[in-house]
Amino acid sequence: MEVEPLRLNAQLAPALEKLKAGLSTQNDKQALARFSQWCSLREIVPGEVDENTITKYREALLQRSFVKNGEKHVQNLIRSWNACAAMVEGRQDTKITPFPVEKSS
Image 1: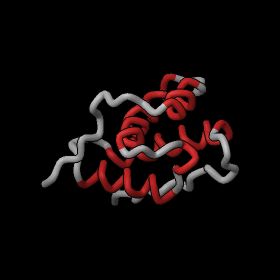
Image 2: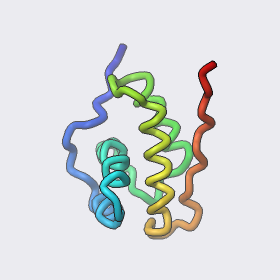
Image 3: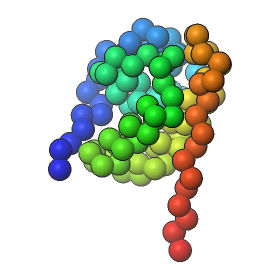
């Protein structure tokens, strides 16, 4: 399995740093931390984030990382992203639809 380097203490892009700083809770900041680094490494700015970006990140997280509770992490990320969506410059449609959560029987 190829492992995805999701957290390398990457320097955040200024726009992502600004977005993260604008969040009011530590939980939201933590939920965006890994994703912000992933985006920064790929030169993805907040205005370019859409459902396709989140899908690619989710695939990397679930298939090529050792992150525990990946689905929960993605759901928290989406909740936090949607909380700060109004702060994304140049975009009005930045809210992300959560992925369906599969219930275990």
